[in-house]
Length: 326
Ligand code: SD4
Image (cartoon, rainbow, N blue to C red; front, side, top):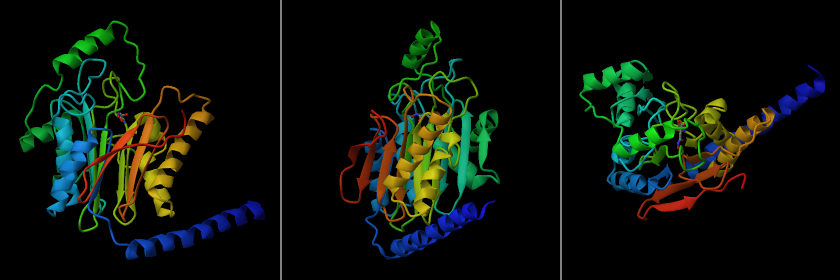
């Protein structure tokens, strides 16, 4: 290595250190505007309100967030999460979910059929097994052992749409409409503890067995109890490629605000598109993030992404995310 290159690396490394220690000091001093809960998309209004009701009573961020996302999983009108989620190209609804707490405990399930509350199943993997991820039949078997109810998740409307889709079998995800309703939710409780869940039926008409970013710790969700948390929605393959949620949290660890950290992660994704000389015309990716102080941020690749925020003593609010491209 040339001396100048070496110096560049050294300078870069030492430059990062003061920012980091500044952040830690700042975190220790600031009073938390807590509790607070944030969630992707409009249904987050209801799920963050539910979480806040529980957080204000003193529930942990893990318990409150789980109760929030479960509302969405049980609602057949939400067509990309839980019951009523759109099927894969074989007509099967397969769900993905994960959770992470402030201590670094993680649990995840992927490609699960017939179980509505996969978020709770992911939590059970976290709390009741020596593992962190169970998939497909193994996850279903575990759910049965725990007595989770089984039901057909393919509602009539989804079935009819799928039959219609099969006429052309064109796999063309429509930005913000067809494939982008994953719920990622993060809360900060009265103890100052962060936790998050991410749950989805994934991309509509995906190949059977396809797993997106949502159940992948670091991609769809990441929580570092000493720094902050982030979660993603949108085109999962792109989020996995950049380990998106981890990227957001590691930018916060370097000292960036949640807002700037989300912007960095979206720019990184765009940079990978550019390298492959691909357009982002049919793609949407959105991140939301919160740091340990309860400051929040969001950023998306394209317009249309919204998220909900609910702070202590206030009604939940829907916010249009800033974005990179029109
Ligand atoms: C996936 N990220 O399976 C999910 C889809 C999504 O909002 O976010 N929908 O790739």
